[in-house]
Image 1 (cartoon, rainbow, N blue to C red):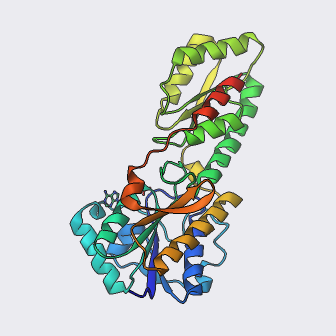
Image 2: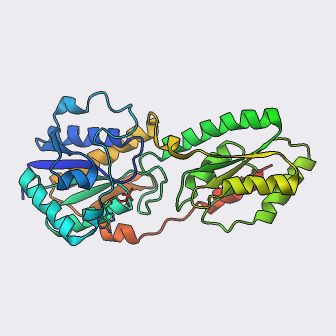
Image 3: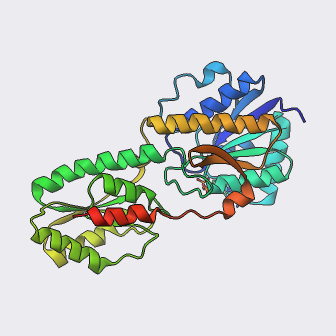
Length: 321
Ligand code: ADP
């Protein structure tokens, strides 16, 4: 079937660089003579027929902006067959025979269901946590890491002045990628990630040993999935006698102007998604393996596993003080 008109939406958690992907989808499709519509608020907007026509200028001046101009939402209804069937009807009414879904694993499940009903969908990985298994990189990850690093540098200044320990929670519900990388970049004394069992005693000993060697300010990084930073700060203070504070960096890590890497990755992935759809190929997720663009069957992609870089974790431990 010839692809004449496609849609693009952003769904689930937002990530800096999603706008670059939307822009690439729109421009690449128009370049191929394919019409494009933007669907607002993810699957919610699809079910409500919230559609905007996208011309070449509609995506001007957005590549440098955080967030997503198409907005994003979570849509409970789309988790069920009836919801997806309504989505298929909406696609037919809107007149699209292809859809680019920019989001995470949850959004890809919806894309797989919609593809199974005859609307070819291609998933573009956008999530700050970098927790999508089929790709080594997801849009938003680099910006989020850099924000976490910058915010933690600020905390380090005040930790240094007051000779304190700062226990910092960074994003990563199921994955410690941000914690590990931002932790290394900020000179963390200890990094706590969901993938590795937390040895609290070892952490206390490490802090005490560094203190005995003359260190007076400490940063402890904790991934969101482990949490409990307020209690941990209290325990550190009780055990070591070092005044401690905690900070949850939270949603600040989702925002901000995307880094070069996220703008380029968003552009590459969005462009590639359109190349597949233009050939009538659906039910795929695009991503990177060894720096190269790749695509996978959505179901296969969802079954894949990605682990934390344990070599990097070991290096982090070896250089921590
Ligand atoms: P993310 O895409 O970032 O992982 P969510 O897990 O919240 O975020 O999923 C985003 C949306 O994708 C959900 O609100 C829902 O509309 C849709 N979705 C999630 N899981 C499924 C599923 N199993 N089947 C169909 N659609 C789903």
